[in-house]
Length: 346
Figure 1 (tube, rainbow, N blue to C red):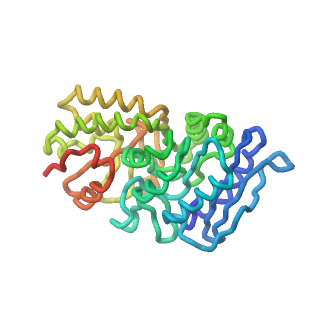
Figure 2: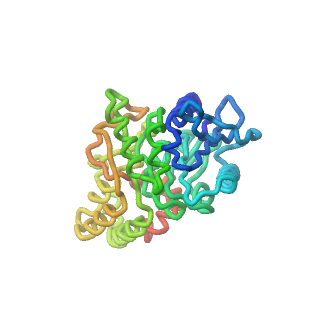
Figure 3: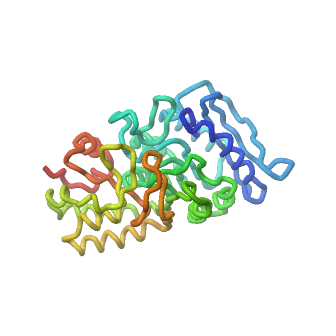
């Protein structure tokens, strides 16, 4: 939990929710460790385990000197410490903080990748380097916008499954008391984790009835990449730049001036309007990759309020635009771009 930011006030509520879910039965013999860095306290590592009253209790494992919790060194050290002190046949990881998919932290003051610690952010390439030192049964993001194809592809080798939202997640976050049980099943029930998240918000009303979530089977991402490579091997620069983005489902509202993240399937459908055979290959690959997806009919975005979600494939994608030259250049640093685009059109 990288919480030295505006989310710090909800840390306690999320920890209490975890404690409420940590019964002996739900933990199933496993260990739940939480690294917490808030604005008001030094970073700490806790174990949450069943207490005498039947619910979980928080046990301090270690308190650390103040540090940047979204630095690669800190994250790597904490994960290594936990994996060595609490060895297990399988591990899952939830990353909790702010997030904006692959967008760069140095383009504007508002954009960043995963995590915020004061004025520090973690770029997706840095996150990939850290997590690829380990392997997880699942990786989940309790952070906005991390359900993008670019993020998924960058992290495909560090986990079997990715659980993430391509839109914004309300600050209340995951219903942790409800998802401890599927997290600690003998084989983590990743679709149940995502479904419980969706059901929790879908049963609410007003702006609280807002949730988009998906589960990605990472071993299938390479076939999606192959399908997209075929697409970008055949389309022209004119086809790329002339996608009618006003007709494509927007999944991001981070700027008042432009949009950069769109629904993956809806974008590719428009991109390949003259290449139906390429779109069929893509759809087949995507259906094998996204094994669960759900979205409420509207999603809440902090800048604009409730927005209708009419097309939802479970992942977002960047839509290159000639006027976004800085983002286009930054995009070329990503493993997704290097795998999929044969050349950047003029």
